[in-house]
Image 1 (cartoon, rainbow, N blue to C red):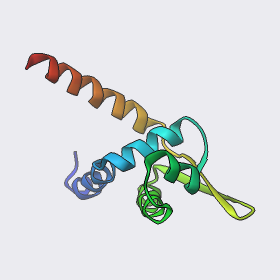
Image 2 (tube, rainbow, N blue to C red; image 1 turned 180 degrees about the horizontal axis):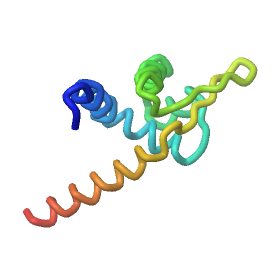
Image 3 (cartoon, rainbow, N blue to C red; image 1 turned 180 degrees about the vertical axis):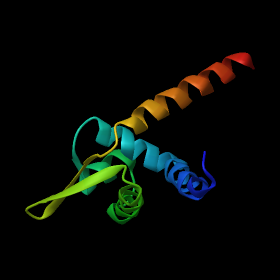
Length: 98
């Protein structure tokens, strides 16, 4: 990996390194959702969900589309799901070794 990419790649992983953001990505991966829907699913405030989504948008992981008075969020990078699946498989393998 080129040195110039180390910081941006680390920032990308930081965006994925929080359980609530991973859950949001999982739910958005199942279909478009509003902040209110996501807040209900995760039990967080809409403001908290909005902050998480803003960070995910900055890293190109989700996209937002305004429809009337509601913002709808969808997955912008399907490769994140493959990455998460790979990490989950590795975690499961490691747990089986204990």
